[in-house]
Image (cartoon, rainbow, N blue to C red; front, side):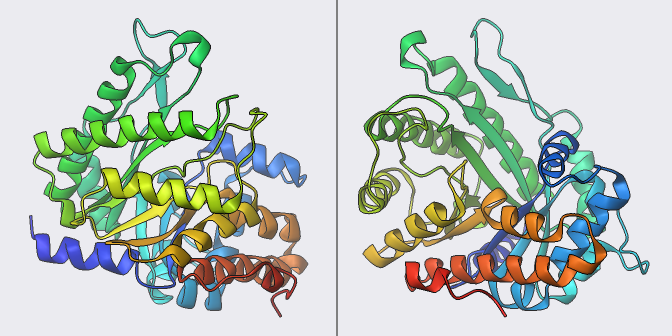
Length: 344
């Protein structure tokens, strides 16, 4: 492992004003997104859609540091035969790859899951590195349901252990791991419950990373924010989310970690941007705080594109606008007024 090189890539991934495009939707997830806009989820349509994003020159060059790809996408070529990985590299962005293989029910823990995909991961990482991937992503999923005593220590510890083993394998393969322990916002819990569970998850995750001898300087953390569940009667202001999330991260994340790239986790486009901006306005943080958004970057361009070649420019304009808004938020320079100034 060359830690200096891993650290250089990790720092580039969280460079000021830049963030990560999560374009790693599984075939099932992208089908759901395409169903909403009336587009059939064929391999060609998926390729065309992602090619549209990767050819958005301003967004990719100025605001996007890296792209997380799905297994299908990393091997695909653009319509003109150029590998999609090359399009990303030519824009000055870093190709990455989702390497987990989804979740399965966790034995003896009703309603909880474990992320799988460690078997033969070392061999897969070597192939992905050869194809151009320089970072990877693994997502653990932690649900909250206080009525059922969820999450359990079993689920948190097992998923943290898997995340740490994945991260160690990545660094061995000279690939920067994005460590993503996501506490879901699907429930009826309040913001303080989210805070407490996320604190538990993060502390267990960093404990397991230590046990697996993962070099913190060569990784990126992709956490959820401290937010109330979608079904909660108690909403939280942008400032409360920002203050509690910053407090949480300061309590849990060592300063050796180069950066934190948030997931949007079901927040609306503007909510995800506003929360990130408010955190960066607080300032005085030991690590870079940026975005690693999927739906919050892509919902607008998907709708504008709607599978039609004549809408490619409109889709790219929508993507560029959202990328620019989040770039400003990553520097604490966003405002709601800027949302109304649509991209040219």
